[in-house]
Image (cartoon, rainbow, N blue to C red; front, top):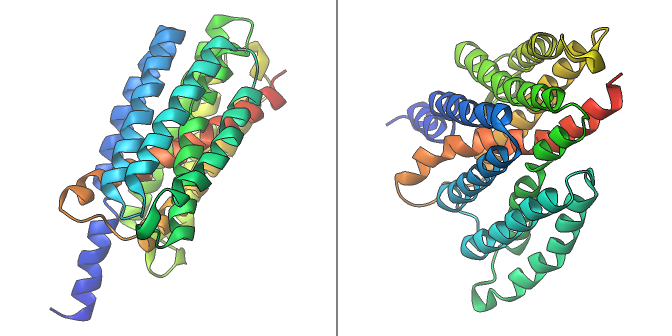
Length: 282
């Protein structure tokens, strides 16, 4: 096997765009339906996505301290879900408190690893990212509660789901065709895909929010384009993580890896969408 063939096989194992597209469409369908159904179904959908993300993180990445990370992520997710349910109009303050209180536990987790305490910085950074993504997703439910009209809240949260996952899918499709110009020669993500994600976000934002009185005058298109660009950039960042972090042992890691390429960017998008939609609404 030549070096070029080995590099191609390694890239196929790390970047599964087809799998990521399938995951994005499936999760978008579930969350999109829950946003139209009510607050409780949306909360259940968020909890299911959080569980899927934690599962994929543990079995898809060879990050030290994965078992303890799963426990911390589960506790942080439960705390975030409870706070957005008890204080639905507290904006992002309660979620920020949850993440802040989780920070000391990250250091306790590293100390508890004992004799196997190796690659501490890598482990600490990885667990911190996992906790941050888990705590960020419930901001989607907070966004729904910030509008007086339940219908408007449903439309906005639904629009965020369509924009976020749709922009990721468009970016994957463009990169499958031509990943150019690349941000890095070894990472198959390009600027054209980012521009396509931005364009899709603007179109989806206009179509989903054009009937809302709070997003008149092109506000929906602007918000959609901005969110499409942000989730596209998050997708590129996750691609670099996929490139640098080794796969977990076993073939199952390759199957769950596409979940991370979709869920991490969308989870991080949720609080950005909350702030942006509230800032530009009429």
